[in-house]
Length: 378
Ligand code: ATP
Ligand code: MG
Image 1 (cartoon, protein in one colour):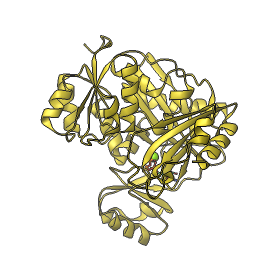
Image 2 (spheres, rainbow, N blue to C red; image 1 turned 90 degrees about the vertical axis):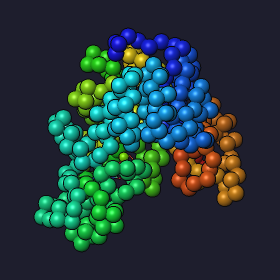
Image 3 (cartoon, rainbow, N blue to C red; image 1 turned 180 degrees about the vertical axis):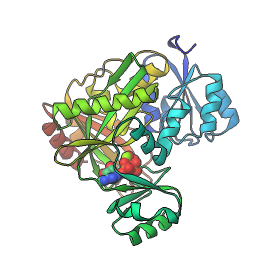
Image 4 (cartoon, rainbow, N blue to C red; image 1 turned 45 degrees about the vertical axis):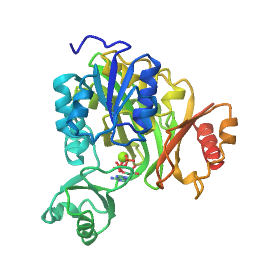
């Protein structure tokens, strides 16, 4: 059964109805598939494009049974309950597998696993109880203490310089399992999105160069401004991780570019399309969401070729006025090579990802300059 391609108008299911689920639904619907979304939020961004919105908690048995009726099921986030994944896998095709998702849920397992695959991580140590803080930890200072689970956009992290600060940080994070990572000499951050059906059918997108502001991704520039050799290495490393996991679907691999030699160190993986891959919608032959649809349906990945240099910029709720006034969309909408994508969310919370735009240009520098200017005009 795993090998028979699933064709339109089959019903596809997705756990999670945020912006990633929304862009997945757009891709699937465009190809003529039908879409069922499971998400407890009545205003879930994906619901607008789905045929069916199961508005229930992610562990709701009735909703999961309904989702299990789909021809195939995927996920838009990694913090899915393993039991839910296993239940679904008993009834329908699930990709990526629950085991792959589980690796990405816990930084301790994730780092151990990356090293087992023969790739580098920042030097680290698991800190699960106060007694774990000792001589080994001192060698990792200055470092960053990160909660092992549920961190995103730089949340659940504290930078520490001394053993005393480390002890205080561990207590402040609630005494939950953490990893202490040594601060690396960061020269840049990149990510590679891999699309894998099986060992013969694997494609990688060009690495994206990621610029963060306040711990949140602000810009992704493609092609990354790194040597062709380093870019090739990054693609090979991402592919190696996907192969080691026997991964089926779209996998994002975040890497640090370290030191003068631009050594690549794996930071973390995400078992799904990634924010740094949103430019693929407007600048690549096939985008990461079309790939997600194809792979869950047992179809080989399509062409990942970059058709134009570009820069993606996130649009956070901060650019809305204090009373919810819309940003000034005119310069962006007037620009002939800018593509606006909004997620249909209310600008209620600060720092919320409301949308993004991608601007195409002659080269990476020009794209980044245009994106900064257009973002400033909002
Ligand atoms: P996101 O959701 O954006 O992926 P996150 O909460 O998963 O973020 P990380 O990606 O682990 O957190 O770290 C957030 C940022 O902190 C990184 O993008 C990087 O800029 C910085 N950082 C993390 N670990 C290190 C390190 N070992 N050395 C230097 N900088 C680091
Ligand atoms: Mg990260």
